[in-house]
Image (cartoon, rainbow, N blue to C red; front, side, top):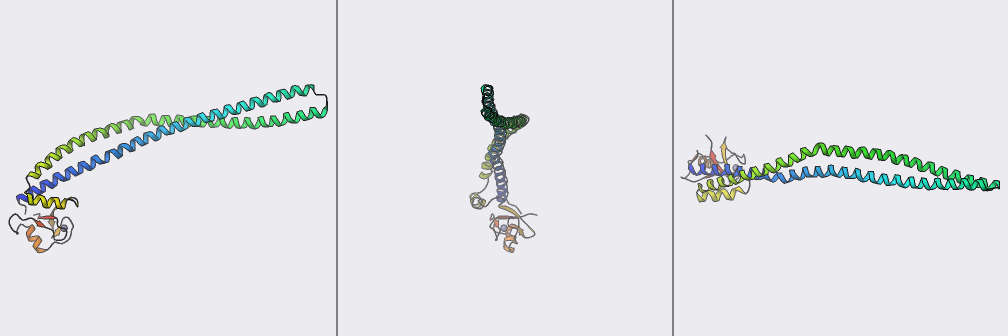
Amino acid sequence: MTGPVLESLLVLQDRDSKRLSLESQIATIPAEMARVEKTIAAEKGAIETARTENRELESKKKLLETEIGSLEDKVGKYKIQQLGVRKNDEYQALGREIDTMQGQIGELEDRELEAMYAIDEAKKRFAAAESALRENIAGHETRIRLLREREVNLTAELKVAQAELASARTQVPTPAARLYDRLVSRGLPIVVPVRSAKCGGCHLKISSEAESAARGKGPEGELATCDQCGRIIYWES
Ligand SMILES: [Zn+2]
């Protein structure tokens, strides 16, 4: 049983829920946008990390080369010195020095090889990070553009919905509108049908008085409410 007041409330509720749904859809957009931007930043970050890594390895390699170079110079000088030495023990002492340095050179060369290998790996990582961003960036940008469009469209829809809501409100008599406003803070729906003698909001059984009021047998123009949760109830035939 639905009278004109109830009809106006149902329209109000319908438009109110449309407004709420639009508002909540709009509210999700910034987080979604931030998520895409975070992904882009992470992909750019991976490139930067690989670039830095590469730079550090290159300078490590240069340092090793310099060390090797200066040791080789020393070995060269010792060898020349050795030629001028007459005493056997001096000759042997220089020989030992030369051996030690050549051992050091060998170690440094191993490390240089490791650095070169690491540089190759870092270059691969850099290339992979770069190509990942290149492949994904168009998708990311499209996603951001679509999100912006969506925000614009939803905002326009919300404007219309707000106007429709305001106009629906003018059709609701003041006492009913007050009751609606009081109830609405708990969330929609607050104008609910009665089915099998149960409130469509809280799903509890309603009293026979509430049921007959919902059937429209109460005083003229009076709204029936659930005696459990207070929602406005109506009989759905
Ligand atoms: Zn109820």
